[in-house]
Image (cartoon, rainbow, N blue to C red; front, side, top):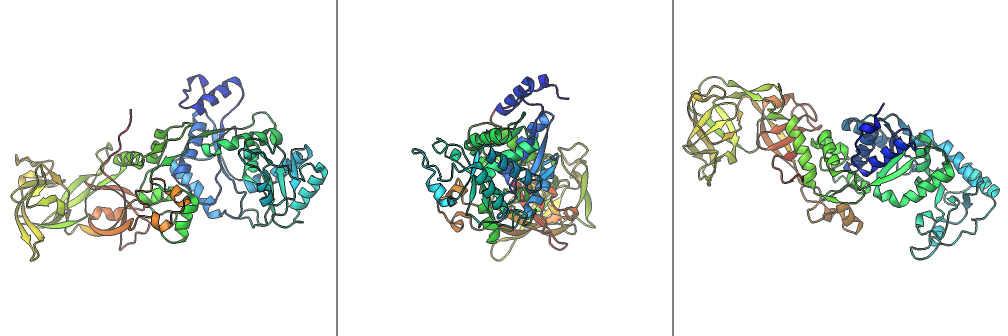
Length: 560
């Protein structure tokens, strides 16, 4: 039992809920995720679902996952199946998964019949085009349909015949009888049902009429026992209609309340489902889980963490007004979480061969900590030997000021191994460096250094005989930087080809320590001094593919 006196509300919605619970307006907190199964969830949906679940959890309630499948022309079981996996990844378990088409369509139809009997709805024979013309404008009232005042028994008979399939698609609609002069155009006798002979992925051909979202949604909330219908502010203008349907169609105690919060406005990110679908169907990306997408499946494949996404959403807060958020804010929280959990590994992206001239014998085993931020996080074995590879950028024969890596006659420490001194650089005929000749200081092994030397820098490396080639997928932002709001640019007529950043995914080869052969799909690593990477699902026994997740440097500053 939740002690209400101990709950401290953190936003305006929680303040209202707490007051409702204390004065008896609500008995419990039940929320819902009501996606239309017409595409994969993206980070914008994450905000809504996290708010739904976290709000219910805070007040000892629960959340339903409801497939709001009232539009069979756009819905597929594939999408519905993905949502449970997405919620599990985020760490949430819904009270129940419900398909509105199976659970509520019969009852919604009965409610519609009762509204006809009570004079709140009528069957209209105007085409939807004519209805739209008669809606009026923001400054002028609409015009009543000539069928608006037909006897309720006649409307009821026509509605039942609509259900029985006696009329062609689009020929009749059921409309709510509200006010054609209402200042909110949505309240001007909106459609409740339309005739549409579409095969439904769950109910087959049982129905040839389908409820419109604005009517079905509040009825589903009410039938489900939802007490708080939380949604983004694009639905604020719909609230008045939501409440009208609740009053006229439900009118029972503990009816749901709709409350709205700001949308997630993330700069330089393409989120609109129809645009993402266009990219998927045109094969311009690898699928809905393309790592350049901020779909949940795409973020997961890229290597983003659920905790990082949740921390980001929570940092944005629950507020009623809009704000814009830089992409770096999301990256900050992803990087912060990866730093806590990612396993460290040594990978050389641009290799330079180094021969240790005074080393003889077999490779020597060294130890690399898996993650210094994890208590008892363990270590894994790597090797040091005669031939190693370092990053080309970690050697300079003409070093700039404050260069703390390897130079001619200079020293540097190798991570987990020894200090080495560069004695000679061997060049190719074209002037490029072919390899380095170095010596190692035998008394300088990490953890047992008695050399007395104090190198200014430490670099990573891999050892020949204990390494293998891997493929790196590097990513740029999917859309060009000049398009701050990509979805708006597309809506304004910019073409997809113009919007997309060319070569936003490129592959390269790197050399990794053999330890990474043990990696499993979605395992996350910090390639030392380079960034965070995760093993991609396209990996085969002969080709390990790692997706670049995010770099080590952070430009975002937390306010506070």
